Amino acid sequence: MTAQDALSPSQEDYLEAILLVQRDQTVARARDLVERLGVSSSSVTGALQALAAKDLINYAPYSFVTLTPEGERAAEYIAVRHETLKRFLAHVLGVGAEEADESACRLEHAIPADILDRLTRFVEFIESRPKGGPDWLAEFRHYCDGFGAPEEREPVDDATAGQPACLRDLSPGDQARVVRVTGRRSSTKRLVGMGLVPGAELRVERVAPLGDPIEISVRGNHLSFRREEAEEIAVELVARGQRRRWRGSRR
Image (tube, rainbow, N blue to C red; front, side):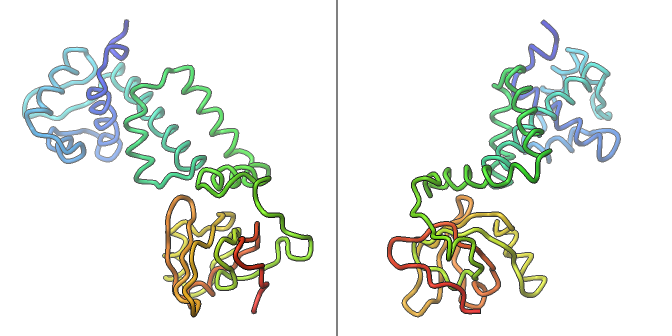
């Protein structure tokens, strides 16, 4: 059994943190790890002593911390494992960036190496096929959001399928795909930050009697928009809601 095999989840977190700090500033200090990991100074001291005993780091009290060659190999593997899981959660499952990062941190300590290798290849396979992957991947994310599989949706006839419109034109229950976000640059950046990127699918949950505000769900998030904001989000119909029929574009 190698030193890496015998590492505890906490020790793996320390090795990864040391690697990331070293990438930023060549060497790490105990206080850097206190800040990065949110732990006490005494906890850091104990962890560093244990890692030094395994010959994974070079450490002496009140001195810098650096990785040994073996420690760097172990830390690189841990970092790749974390990044792979984070990419899978964020890019494939559509989990928010912060939640994906936190979840990857918990999952990385338990996943076997052979499964990680397959997962890495799966993520690379998807990301290497931007033209062939987005459609089925978007459908999968949509299904995870509780919108149902494509065959479970109310069909859209040829006359209205893919018809351009804006979010303002949709009715409760309608499902649509984002085409583009227009408007001022600051406004567009904010909307994109909410997950309204081209290809993302959304569902209209509620529309106020006078059409303002409009509530939608997209990628697991529930958002509310004023009428003016809704006019800046161009969409195409994916499936009709059950309350009212598609009304087409007013533009």
